[in-house]
Image (cartoon, rainbow, N blue to C red; front, side, top):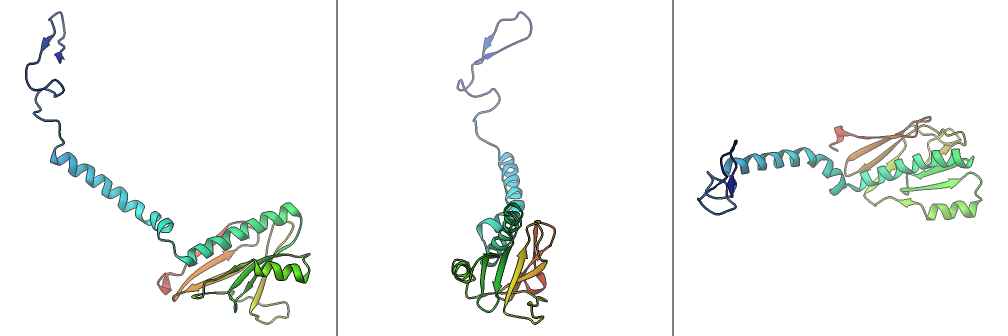
Length: 187
């Protein structure tokens, strides 16, 4: 190892320790203070990233269903606009079933679409507050329409599980579905 000096003085060899160790340091390890600083930084990064990891790693089934419904609503709005067809999202609150049908489907095709739809877990229920059927009465089966011009019926869908509630707000003219956790019930 050679210490370079400014000027015309020759390069002199450093005669202490091994060739890879810098002058003034007996060993090449880390100090306690350096380790504490690094561990503090890693702990802070983990602390602030944990809430976002929670939604990816420790997923709740009701959040999965809410995201699935939200993506289905966005997809139906886009498909209705692109295909120039009316699509319908059916929700059977008593059976816990959600399925998609085309307005032009016959009864056999509609029954097949219901079979291939989403069935909620046994401990989860769905409700549409304030939704009334075509006859003006509240029914156990609701239908949201997605029109060829790109808009839909507005609705609020409640997903309930273990005393907790997720609310999905479907805006008629927006493709985004807002998912709100009901914190009053402990979600």
